Length: 252
Image (cartoon, rainbow, N blue to C red; front, side):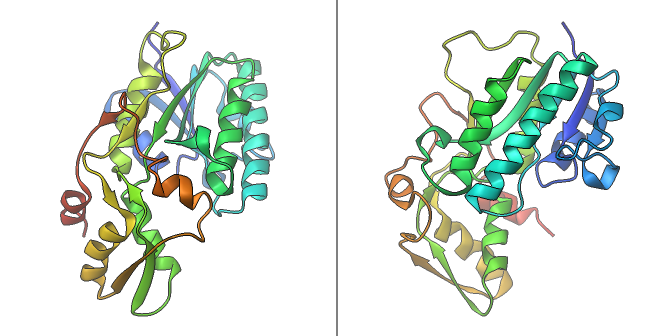
């Protein structure tokens, strides 16, 4: 069955913008859903109207801060509303972006994302999940959070991936005619090479005139799991470029 009409939750976000672009380039009809377009997936404002005639939802809406409790509450409400309103509108399925290693998380934003997965999977509509590595775009955010000429960035292993690459892979999953066979591992997308967050930040810092110092990152949620490679891609993951350096060279 070919699915042509998509609603994208979180359409104006970092990943959502790319998902809308990819769907549009592939000739699909897209209804962008975000507060900026008058659709609030938390209060439900505009949601029933936005989902009228929609065949599938792609959920890339995210909570803007790392507080576990607030993020969990956001995902709990959004999952319930997307299922409830989606079922009423006759939506066939939901595809969502998650995080590699989410099943191991015990704290912080990633633990909230783990609950998000569980809640979406327990709802009435079929759900397809793509787990992604941390985005290239996140490195700049880490530098933005720190004031001054020196930034202290965790030297934790990662396999950074471009948002555009994640969007393409998620749209592939959402538009595939057949659902993944039962028992197959949840698909993962990551970048082509393993590096530390601090190494990537040093490349960006050099462009911005910021000195980046790698630190052990022990203050981060689940730092020990991260240090042991718990958030690195599984053997079954798809690895795709560009590398962080290649991506950085294309940025204005």
